[in-house]
Image (tube, rainbow, N blue to C red):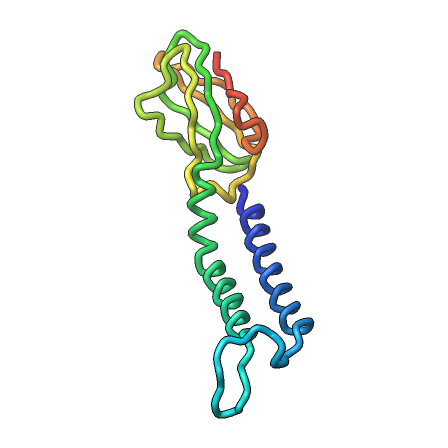
Length: 164
């Protein structure tokens, strides 16, 4: 659900690295007047720090591109959640959601949601590419089932879904 935001930040970082590389390639003159790093006895002159800086930027960009997928997936799972409030007289024993045209998938409620309680439920990382708008329904301990309600899980994360 938020992979676009994370990828945008990574893309922006890479663009900044490339812009810095461009600035150092084109605007910094290659002469003996710039800061020097080591002496090259074969050439009889000092060698610029510029190539090592470029290697640093490229290494940095490579590291970000390698670590990006694990960073994005680890962050996403914890960021998508919703709250459920049980205003009924019976415990919620099963909570299910489905995309339009899909099949019902249940949430792990760890024993249910007692009457009068409000709980936070985290989405599994496998749902990151699912639609934001999904149907949700609850099954109570007395056997009754609510009618499916369409809910936008990408907006109002802290506003609870109330089951009566």
